[in-house]
Image 1: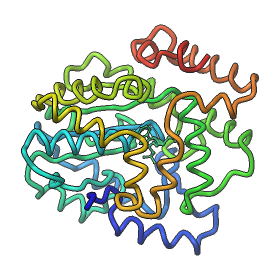
Image 2: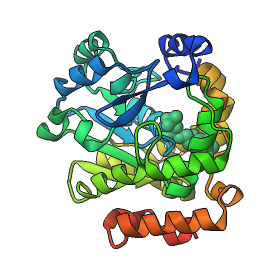
Image 3: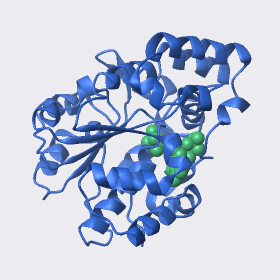
Image 4: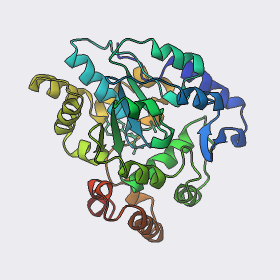
Length: 301
Ligand SMILES: Nc1ncnc2c1ncn2[C@@H]1O[C@H](COP(=O)(O)OS(=O)(=O)O)[C@@H](OP(=O)(O)O)[C@H]1O
């Protein structure tokens, strides 16, 4: 039986979306939009006080950059390295955990694996103070936008967009859940030389999943045999994960595992939109290490 990645309680909360007006589905906290059904302002207050420890694992991603993929890979790596089978504690996003749940997280035995979609400035300070290792997965901004557009339209807990053009314009201005892709990218660029932060890209994982798994394991000082790496790679392809998604993600399976891969932006962007995003990328990330890592010329031109 595959382990559930989306807890039943989150699915139950999302059922309430049927009774909600689209305008009530998101709320603003400190200038950023969050999903009303899953986050509450008190969650963020409790997060500020959360105590990380050095051997925790924190996975961070802007929405649609490959969080579910990497969280699956991480759990498999941790289970294999620690000789467990599907036992690694199920984790939820820190911002979705109410204060009581966050308190309970504190009682979990190590090695805890946690995740978040928030910007570095909103990550509990203790992660940085304790030098906890933080893995960040990024994806090129054009495919991220397309994935996000479909997510908004398929996710019952988010207000649907009646056109790609409308979504694109809000994505560019950062008026989407979790804010601007570019604010996240610029913020992570400042951490790129840190020994405790590793940034990996979706596209590099697509190109060489085995190498991606090895890099992640090495970063967390977890030792895997070649056979274990191969087995994790086989269980972590898009097809393998999509096939199991009903079991692991319930009704959200089809919403999250949509198409996978690189380049779907070419089926959505107009030439003008493509140029607009090129200019924004140039302004925010040209000449930066994260900009180079994203291989924009290869994946976005
Ligand atoms: N194993 C594997 N291989 C390749 N691609 C994968 C995989 N698992 C998930 N995905 C794709 O990742 C996109 C979803 O991103 P997230 O998991 O970050 O979404 S979320 O923000 O947490 O809802 C979404 O991208 P799109 O298909 O382009 O929409 C998923 O299909």
